[in-house]
Each structure stands twice: as C-alpha cells, then as structure tokens.
Image (cartoon, rainbow, N blue to C red; front, side, top):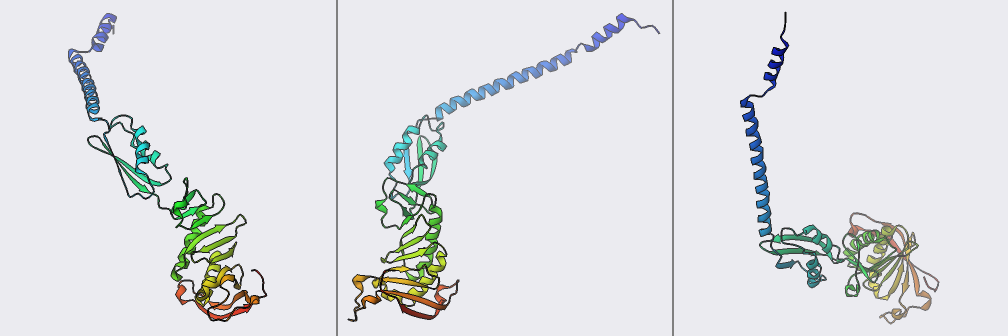
Amino acid sequence: MVVNRHQGGAARRQKSRPSWRERLRWLVRGFSMLSLMAVLVGVLWGGAQVFRKLDVPISVIAIKGEFSHVNQEEIQRLVEPLIDGGILSLDLAQIRSQLELQPWVETVTVRRQWPGGLVISVVEEVPIARWGKQGFLNSRGEMLEIADNSKLKHLPLLQGDENTERSIMKSYREIAQLLQPVNLKISGLKRDPRGSWWLSLSNGLELVIGRDQVMEKMRRFLLVWVSGLKDKAWQVERVDIRYDNGIAVRWNKKTAVTTTKQPIAQEHMAQKYVVKRFVMQEQDMKRQAVRELTIAPEKPGKV
C-alpha cells in the first residue's frame, strides 16, 4: 500500500487547526475573564471609596467603669496619641494592650460606636494587700508597682523576698480564712530571708510562727485562743508558736497589773501555755476540743 506524504501532512494540518466553533468558545471565555476582572476592580475601587467615606475621624471618646484609683483624664491622655486615622482604620488591639500596661488597670474593652465614637470600658484592679512601700498585690498574687501605696494603709502589709508574692498571698488567704470564725484579722504577714513567718493581727497581737508547719501551728494557737487566751488578749504582746507541743506568751508590761487588784508578779511576766493532749477535727473548727490545758510558769526573761 502506497501512502501519499503530501496528503498525510495536509490531513495533520487540517486536524490540528481549531475550528471556528472552538475559536468562538475561547473568545467567549476570554471575554468572560476580562469582564470578571473588571467587575472585581470595580468592586475594589467602590469598596475603597465607601471605606474612605465611612472611615470618619474619632470625635468622641467615652471611658466607662467604676473607678477608685484609675484617673480618667490619664486614660484619655494615653489614648489620644494612639488615635491615628478614622474609626475603621483604628487599631483597637493596640489601644487595649497599651492601657492594660497601667498598674491600676486589670482589663480593657475597646469598641467602635458609629458614627465617630470610641467606647473604652475599664475594669480596675482590686488591691488585696500592700507589698512593700510602692506596690500592691491583686487577687492573683501579682505585684503591681505604683508610686506610693500610703493610701492603702487599711490593707494588710505583706513582705517577702522577690518572686515570693504568689506563695505569700496563698498563705495569707489560708491563714485569713482560718482566723475568720474567731473574728481575728491580719494586719501584716512577713516571711524573712531565712524562711521564718511573722504574723501581725489587727488587735495588736504578734505571732512568731517559724519556718514550717504554718497551718498546723496556727490551728494549735486557735485552740489555746478559744480556750481562754482571748479573754486576756489585751494583756498579750506576742505569742511564740514555734514549739511542737505548745505556745509561749509574752505579756505586755504596761498591762501586767490586772483589773482585779491582784498584781502579776514580775517573775510570772513570761508564761508558757502547754497543750498536752487535744482532739482536733480538721473539717469543723467549732467542734475542736481541748482535753487538757495547763499553764506552766517559766523563769522570768524574754521569750
């Protein structure tokens, strides 16, 4: 069989050449793509124009919240430099993060209010205790430094080494909860560099706790307190509860003479309350019972 090369080449050229229908189909597709691109460009351009019209300047800044320590004028002063642009282009996250750096600010919520308003809601930090002379602790045990905490003198003073704020706050809460049923309040709690704890009560009483078994020693003190020591609280200067089987009391020299006209002898200025045996129920302090309580006088001298 003989094949004509010229006929074969013409057939291949005729087969590879697109028909007019295919050309029309490609033309329609190209026109559709161009139309879609034009629509997208128009939408983007129109959106940009609408954005420019809606992105009006901020004309009103409203600061909301219940304030005891936060200065609203200071908040206003901090916000104004951050307002760069209109209401839509404003960076709300930046405003929130900058305001939350302030020591008296706990959380901030920032929202837009049309047409040109900005609403800033501030939740103020609640101080739980003073820390040193220029700081306070919040409910999470975080130390927040301020210029002067003298206006917080009604709060207890907590002291300790750096980075011990959370642990001391935890101990403060536990001890305060333990003392609440007997109406004793903490005015100061200190942990010295050696790890020893010192407690001051609002009634002027001082407690030397020691370095370990803080809560157990406090429970032992409460047993003696409710068993009679509270009736002589006005005579007590300091209580040492570092002992394993009792506590030592230093009497106040100014009130050493009782109102019963029977003076307390000088050699009895220091006495030790010894709890020999007692039954203590952890879950209910009201049911704690002391089986035997004796008062053993010590030799005169400081405890």
